Amino acid sequence: MAISVFDLFSIGIGPSSSHTVGPMRAARMFVRRLKNDGLLAHTAAVRAELFGSLGATGHGHGTPKAVLLGLEGHSPRTVDVETADDEVARIRTTKRLRLLGAEIGAEHEIDFDESAELVLHRRRSLPYHANGMTLFAYDGDGLPLLEKTYYSVGGGFVVDEDAVGADRIKLDDTVLKYPFRTGDELLRLSHETGLSISALMLENEKAWRTEEEIRAGLLEIWQVMRGCVERGLSREGILPGGLKVRRRAATAARALRAEGDPATRAMEWVTLYAMAVNEENAAGGRVVTAPTNGAAGIIPAVLHYYTHFVPGADEEGVVRFLLAAGAIGMLFKENASISGAEVG
Image (tube, rainbow, N blue to C red; front, side, top):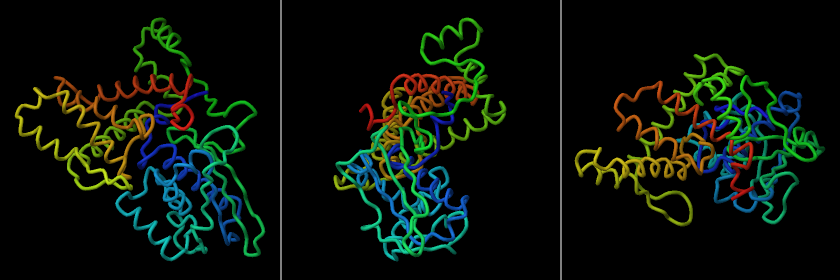
């Protein structure tokens, strides 16, 4: 199974890679399938059913919001996080859904009553994975046009029922120059080739992209991480949800700045960088899965330490770090799981 660093570090939306990013991608995949199969124009109704962890904790993770945005054609990578809540409010108020509207405009609208047509099964699960969802489309006579089941398997990864076998989920089978599945294999390849882990990863990434595209993509991810930290350090107020948790990062940042030389409080700043990302994630902001939304604060925090407190830090170092970190993330995904619903 081939995994790219861009699979592990993907730009998305909070608060959960498996419960928000994955379901939004799945819903968008469904409506794009309708369009590609020539069925979209005949679709008069859609229905979504969420199972397992998606059904049990979906409301707290914004899963219904993600499904609605996905059905309208929004992608976690590009959806406007500043207006997403307004888009969902429009759907709920008008009870009208613009299928794939983010891509083709609003010309194909259908009636949609969320209370009846978006069902969260709190005690029912589907095979293969704890995060399952099934979507249905019907024509004007109520006859079924399409039914698809998707699994959000952690880190924003989504597979549909056509890609699951009897015993495992089948993913990318791209042939890599230096394939590895364990830490021992990774270290052996590094020793045999004389390549650092980041250089070895760079060679593998060339199976999908040019070196220039890889570097540009990783630096874009870094820019999104930086923007996430900046927003988290500047915004105040109450985070979404019933617990009424108050943001703390901005207040703590002001207190730390008043202490003087940041270098004397470097570890406190590292903690604060991670907190800023976590608060943005909880608020439904733009984050980078690293390798999940729940863990999204750690990689940006370490990179901010590098750029702020390590002499000679540069973009090349950022690229090397993300490549090496991606290799470690792959070891966990290959040999365990990055899905909280699956392994906790």
